[in-house]
Length: 68
Image (cartoon, rainbow, N blue to C red; front, top):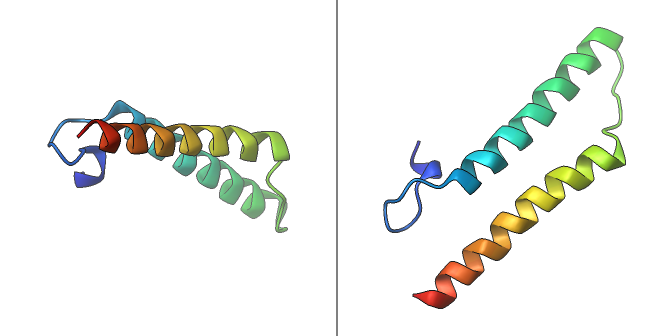
């Protein structure tokens, strides 16, 4: 659970958002691969959403470090 706290000890909803989206996409993809018995591609749109969420958190992290 230390992943969900920032360097100051505050809870981070942005980190929770990244974790939920990333794990959610992986779990659904993994389940569909098992159901179809094939290695499926993750759609580009879904990958783009995860990239936006992770990229937003990355930009926020750099902005917070700049304020310190």
